[in-house]
Amino acid sequence: MVARVPRDVAWDHGRVQPPRLVRRLAGIITALVVGLVVGLLAALPAAAHGAVPEDPPDAGAILLRWEVEPALALALLATAVFWWRLLASVDRAHAENPVPARQRWAFFGGLAAIAVALLSGVARYDTTLFSVHMVQHLLLTLVAPPLIVLGAPITQVLRASSPETRRRVLLPILHSRVVKVLTHPIVAWLVFTAVMWGSHFSPLFDRSLEDRLVHDLEHGLFLASGLLFWGPLVAVDPAPGRMGYPARIGYVFLQMPQNSFLAIAILFAANPLYPHYVTLGAPYGIDALSDQRLAAGIMWFFGDVIFLVATLAVLAGWMRAEERSTAAADRRVDAERAALRDREAALLQLESTEAADQAGSGVSSRDR
Image 1 (cartoon, rainbow, N blue to C red):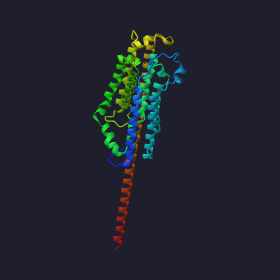
Image 2: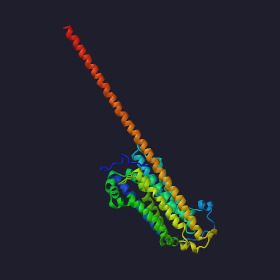
Image 3: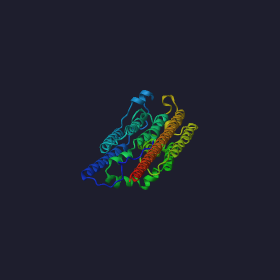
Image 4: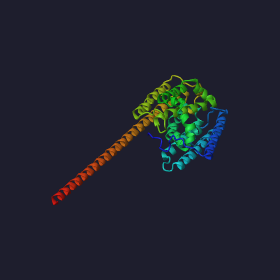
């Protein structure tokens, strides 16, 4: 799973033509304006947050009853278009080394996971059933972030940027102390753990069920902490202090007991943890405590499965890296042996030539 920054992403200091720089600055300003508008739209209060849908959350309702929020849909669409144009720019600039298909589509898969979590029937029932809400949280922390990180977005931005932009803007940000601290594996692991425990065992969770803005902020917190956590594990973007394979296996494997303990704490709670769900009674025939236990089971099973799959994926990557290392070592040994054989052949040829010369010299002396 390790990928290095390609050679064409050099930290060079070449000059850039003004028109190209102007176009890039215009694109950055446009993206900032769009982001600001989307953020303002997302901050607008929504009415009837937490209303109970009449129809039960069956497969049809979850998969087909999408409720498109214009602000969020616009943000996801703008991000998808930006990603497509960014990769097209990378492919044009580096035709000999285009973006791998797995990175291209992994990022789109992450955006799709966010859309399912926040626009599909999952979002329609998240304030009605804690179990559905838990599915939403898993999508935002354990599905969308690793897919986005697998797309190597930092690497693609670096490859698409001009040398001047990399030197003056991007690299100073990536090398800043704040980024180094936040992306440190220990910090990322602790932040992710703190967000998971703090959100589920604090007034924030229940407040988010009543307040749309707080709910949106909670979603952003889940997604951001997930990106921080999965970044050092997937390790396809340049980062200081990259972990080796053994450390990465321990990094992800230790999340399994943390996830299990959190699920167990929710599962064996004697009373419902969130008053909001209690006030709804027993929608669709399931009371708040039973629904809470179902949510804990979903977290426990699917969370541990995802962490286990990630552990196995890192292990498989380690084995492939060892195979590549062994093959490279074999090639070096073969090359050294071939060079040695060539030197031996050249030495034998030289010795035979010298012997022939000496023999010829002896014959000439006798003739005289």
